[in-house]
Image (cartoon, rainbow, N blue to C red; front, side, top):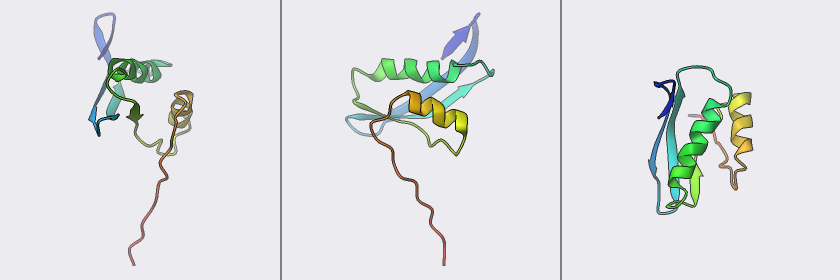
Amino acid sequence: IIYIDGNAMSVVAGFPLSEDTFDIVVSKCTENIQGLSYYSKREMMKQVSDRFTYLNLEEDLGIAGLRKMKKMLHPVKKNEMWRALRR
């Protein structure tokens, strides 16, 4: 949880996917403060970096700002997204 002036402004949470991978599943900010989402995720990554080699983040959902933020984290791998159609 990130506090600004005593108020909770951002929360990031996750869990281990495997011995070497941590999954960040929740990242929410109460205010639209530039850089807060990036800072919050980075701080979570710093907290788990001594135990995990990789971090898994949510998909970018086609949102340009989220995609840009994720690219700034310099990913080592991206998972391909697939769509299935029922016949």
